[in-house]
Length: 127
Image (cartoon, rainbow, N blue to C red; front, top):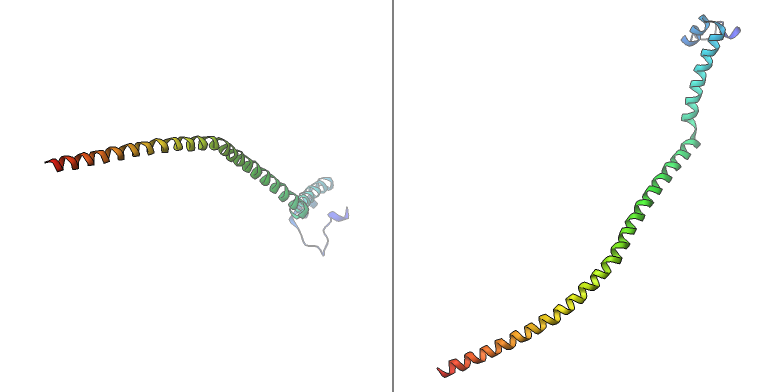
């Protein structure tokens, strides 16, 4: 075939030179494989639509994962709010009861102090 014969105006590519030395069917197969490899690598790297679609798919995965994490945090927070509200109410009622008991204790202690001071003055006045 004419395409395997060297042309005087073409440069000598080593792949083409090797193909010319082989048989025509083997050379055609070798050339076809070489060109298909180049075409597929160029098509994969030069397809901007594929790049955009891949980027969007990656973004979708990231957003979905972040949404799951945020939902878990929200659920934990809501559980904390529900359970701590009851504990906080119990703490407030306990503190109210403690305030009443401490107030009564302060009152009785101050009365005992006043009585002791009065007894002390009485004892000092009689000596």
